Image 1: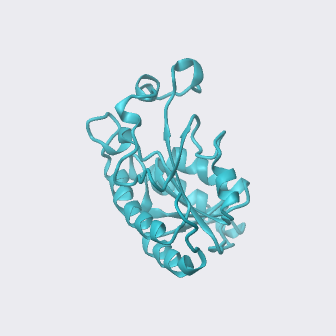
Image 2: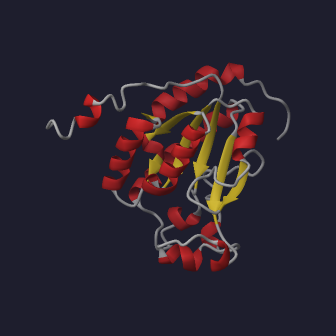
Amino acid sequence: MSARQDIYSQLSYGAQEIGFGKKPGIVVVDFQTAFTDSKFPMGGRPLVMRALENTTRILEVARRGNVPIASCYTAYKSERDMPYWKITTVVEQFRYGHPCTELDRRIYDPDYDFVVCKSGPSIFFHTPVVSYFNKEGVDTVIITGCNTSGCIRASAIDSFQYGYRTVIPEDCVGDMDQKPHRDNLRDIGRRYADISSLGEVIAYLKKVRKHNPRRGCR
C-alpha cells in the first residue's frame, strides 16, 4: 500500500474499536421488494440477495433473544412529498401501495418487528426509531439492509450521531455493485462504525440473550 493510500491510518482514522455494548437493537433498512425481487428494475442484485439471506439468520437469533428490531421501507404519496431524488425508478415507483414498497416476507415478522416508512435515506430521519430504541434501553445498533452506499451509510451516520455504538456486519448489507459497497464500508469503518460479520454478530446476540428477558407480547 502506498503512503498516499495509507494516509488515513497514519492520521489515526479507524484506530479506535468501538465494540459491542450491553443491549443491542437491529435496524433492517429497505429490504423491500424493489430491491429483493428481480421483477423490479433494481431488484435481485447479488450483493443485496446475499445480505437478505444472511440477515434472516441474524433476525432469527435476535427474535429468540427478544432483541428489538426496527424495519423500514421507502414510499411517498407523490412527487410533492418526496425529496429531489436523482433516481427515476424511485420517483416513478416508490409510492404508497405499489408492490415494490412491500417488505420482503423473508425478513419481516409483522407480529414482532417495529416498522416505519421513511422519506429519506436514513431509517432514523423523521421516524420514531430512536424513541423506540431509547425506551428499549438500546446502546448498540446493528445495521442490516441496502444499499450500502446510500441508505446504509446514512443510517450509520445517524446512529453514530445519536450516540449508539454502531456495528455493520459486512455480509448483511448490500449494494448494486461491489466497488461502492466496499469503498463505503471502508470509509464508514474509518470514522463511525465497526465493520463486523454475520458470525460475530450472531455470537454477540447469543451472548447477550440472557440479559434480554421477555416482557410479554409485542
